[in-house]
Image 1 (cartoon, rainbow, N blue to C red):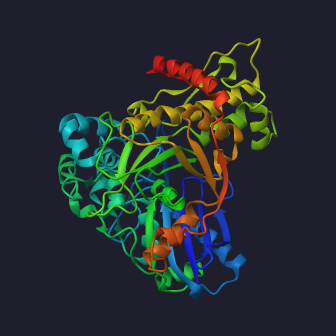
Image 2: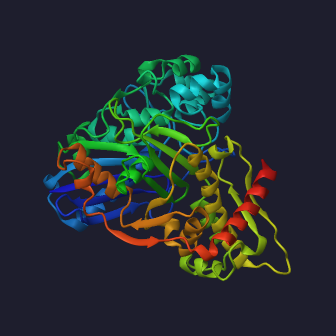
Image 3: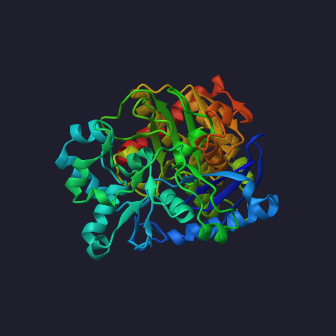
Length: 494
């Protein structure tokens, strides 16, 4: 008995096949091998073709099925994780009307700011728990104003994961968690945000049907089964945005539990058990995967756009040619904590929510041509990313979030000892690393949704802890001083 999980990212689509009994991953692969194309026709724009996600999903599926050699009929459920906040628009034939406007696209910012001003902070924050910001709803507002012919042809809007599920099942639906990340769920009224739909001039009919996050949401059609080499009728039983799903993957379900990722973008995500929000809307609050009308479970999300993308830029531009990421980390560690006064402000990948949607770019401070070299720049780059996490974590602490322990997957920038030690050192938190990823979590989420597992504790009983990183007390003062200097330089840019 097996479970199949997909993770629809902006860099690639990953598929994992999990043995439902042992919890062991028996096959996993991703496509494309190099980063997927992101279309950027203007600064601040970012689009991807939904058909590209499906093509990559097909290739990843073919690979895991070929390597595992299992009978497709033994797959009992499918789960989907996906890049959040994207806008996919389809016509009545369920065909995309244009490329999807994805999460790191900034064009919705002015529409969100205007809505926040016109509707009022109290109305938006008490109902949406956020400002309308740069989310799916405001991306659609841009389409309405700038591409009216496309807007008039819209049958339904959806998120990237909803699109993948639709291609699998032929059924178009979404979840409360999904609508909350679109900024179209009203937490006060317990339904779609009619006041924002009315303000933006959207008909509620463009929203998909709402289904529970853990449920039978549709079954693989004969057409999709033939396309993917799967069996017809497999239930799609779970879907969630990548950050709520990452928390699920790390078995973060309850108030006070915290998860983090550091891929292209970086996230700290903590669970609250009561309704709360940041009055300045610098962090986001969404319905967590286990939120229901009877049980409040909200995910407070700090997102830093310029994380792994800055690290990869540094590898291409700053690091010696041909060096590996581990080699780059080793070189960075030859510089002292604080990088001898060099600071990198890492906000070079679009508007940053923690900066109230300002787009200030990436900047480097304190370089002395006589004393600093690549090692200082590379260390300052990783420290700058961690310090941006800390800047947002201070906001989360103001909301009552305890950040004494952080769960993270052993992947991406958490593979760097320097990155992990800096995060532990500046925050004082213990970091626990686990062997999991989004596609594996999605597979186990499907097991919960299909009733194969009784609950999350059974689903994640096999979760393997790899390493625990404790803050080194002797280094705490040096990290604090470096962070204070970084924050002073950031404030000069705001």
